[in-house]
Image (tube, rainbow over all chains, first blue to last red; front, side, top):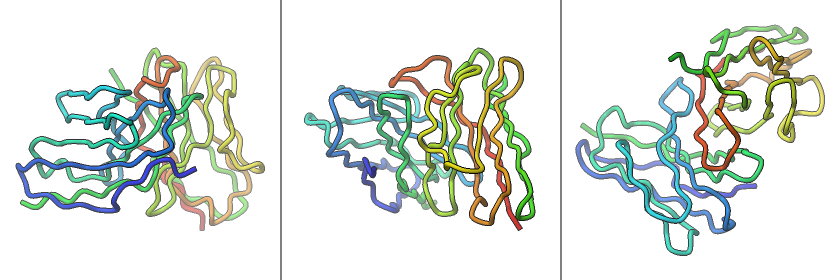
Length: 109
Length: 115
């Protein structure tokens, strides 16, 4: 049931933008795309979610491909506090989150 | 406004003992979810409960594991006769209503170690 595919790790320099990709080629028309992040030894934290249109909030932006088979989480200016594992999740009917292994983001000072 | 609370934060059990993990959802939230995270892996869904009802337990192991969310008090995840493979971080999340657009709020987790 691996519904999302993400790179295992990425690096970014501090204060530069970061683009975290996610493939979800089996997405159905009603699946929402959610992004969460998990800091070491903490529970996951909500970042952003969307269905079809691009979304912006105070933390990040979410760009969703027109065919919805991929999406990109954009952190506009990475800080050291953004170092975490980022999970791209499809929220299916039944309210179940399917977490993959996520992308471990390293921010370099 | 307190977030999702879990206790204990760390739990050590010997093989064969019982483990009880507690989760108090955010105020006003009636939907609770339990996840398990093995080392170096992502979270795996276990069970989804509403007050006094199990809605979806498709991720729960068939034996030794049970969950409840009584009318009063926290949600409990119970593991009987623990084995070393049960060692993991167990996370609880809550949401106010059910829906694919809804954010789930996670607790800090309980780290279970089975000796």
